[in-house]
Each structure stands twice: as C-alpha cells, then as structure tokens.
Image (cartoon, rainbow over all chains, first blue to last red; front, side):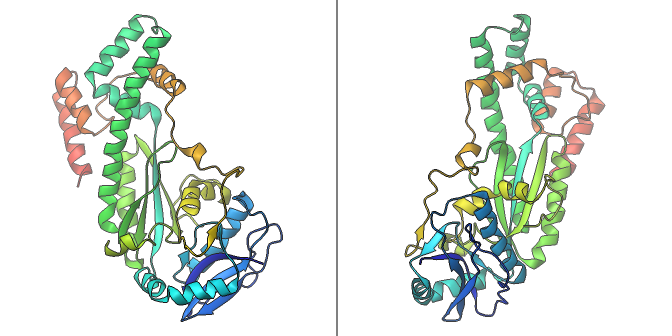
Length: 245
Length: 109
C-alpha cells in the first residue's frame, strides 16, 4: 500500500501524532518514518484520494498539531510515496537539504495577509481622483444611464482604474509589513482580494508585525478590510530560492 | 489553524477556505513522490477563486459608480489622489486639504 506523507520534521520534534486521524474515509492512524536525524509523518494512503474538504482539513489538522509543537516542513496536499521505504530513501538522500531547511525555519511560522476593498469606498476614491472618469460618469447620468455599450465601456474604464489601484495598494501592504518579517512571498491572485501575501515570522518578530498590521488596518479602515490568517506551517517558504531572503 | 487576530469570523472551515490556495499550491514537492491529481475535485476549486473580469463585472462597476454620492467630505480618505482631486477642483476648503495632507503624512510613517 502506498504512503501518504504529511510532513518532515527533525527527530527531536515531540511528534504528537497519537490519536490524530489521517486523510481518507477510513481515517488512518499516523505513523513515523525515521532516518538520518529526521522524521516523516505518514499514514496509509487512501484509494482515490481527492481534494475533498474532509481530507484537506485532515491534512491541515495534522500539520497544525505538528506546528504547535515544533518546526515542520509541510508537504503539499496529496503527496504520496510508493511505500515507507521510499520515504526513508528520500529522507536519506535529502538529509542535508531538509536539515538545513529545518534550521532556517526553526521556530518560524507563516502568516497570510489578504485584503479586500470595500467596493463603494474604493470606487468613490477612484472617481474623486480621476476627472476623466467623473466626466464619463456625468455623461452616463445625463443620458439616463446610457446604452448597454456605454455602460460596459464605462465599467471597463472603472475596472482598469481599479486594477491600477489594486497594484498600488498591494505594494503598500507589502512595503509596510515586509520590514517586520524574515521573508515575504506573494500568493496567487485570489478572487476579491487586492493582495494575497505571506510572511515568515520568527518568535521575536510577531509582536512588531502585529503592531504594523494594526496600524495598516487603521490607515486603510475605510477603504479595505485586511485579514490575517495564521500561524500556519511555512507552506510558502520551502523553496531553495528563498534561502537568501 | 488558529487565527491570530479576529479575521473574517466564521468557523474553522471558513478559515481553511481562506488559505486553501496555500495548502493546494504550496508546500514541499518531492520529485520521487507522486502528487494526487487535483482534476475533478469537488467543493474546493482554486480556479473558481481567480478573478475573471467579465461584462457582468463591468456592468456592476458602472452601476455602482453611477449611483455613488461623491460628496468629498474632509474626513473621507487620506490618499494622494484625493488630495489632488480636491486641490484641482477647488471644492475642498483650505482646512480640509490641510487636514487630508496631514492625515496622509501621519499615515505613511
């Protein structure tokens, strides 16, 4: 039977996996595969695994529990090895790299920041800051709303202005929070959010980060809602490319 | 996952959904292991969350932008455009403009 892999950790991690259920309908028990001073947290892989809410939650619950107890290298959801021996072999061949990663991420967590505009507030600002847009708006109002085509054209123009504004405000969020963090990584675009960005925070950085975040929230209060998620396992900070950050 | 400060409220599943793209698109990828195909997934489609501009979006923007009240009260926003807009139009009082500029300075540390 193949082996589902949740995370790699150092062998000194407390590994509180007893009683935790793994992914799949049968909620398999977790077990450990140890090699070269490292440990992998694994379970039997279910047949026909898919990204069901139940299974994504199970995956995440395991990682959360491990994160609360120590440093963890989270696997991407859905990672399956041929068997436990294949996991051992990977730990052995990658021991240097994983040990280095664990050291670099020691005691650090990821937090994710997403910000969403209050739509009317941002549109009002765009109009107030853009005379051409106001002129077009007045023309539409004078024409009793205008034709379908006129409306689409105006909406398109508003949308373009909003795109420019998004990237400007996204830069602002990143610029204000970056100095408080060990590393920063932009996330993929997410519907409705003008910024989706993750930060890597050491234990001593969290207080300063939260202070900067609450200042930013106040500054943007009327315009946007800034949401913070975490602490999360360092999903976004595992690539060698981030080593120099 | 716990939420460090109050975010969007809601339960655990709400929080999960809010970082689903990290769980599905980030994390360690190991060449020697396979990854389950995410094709045909139910409920949790990342694609559905990507912004798609459409005619419907444009119409909604047009509709909202047309009916908004544009009274530029001095306590609205503290962004450069607004300061410029008020300066250009001359419809903000001297005090109003000054207050806005001041607010912006305080805000931009």
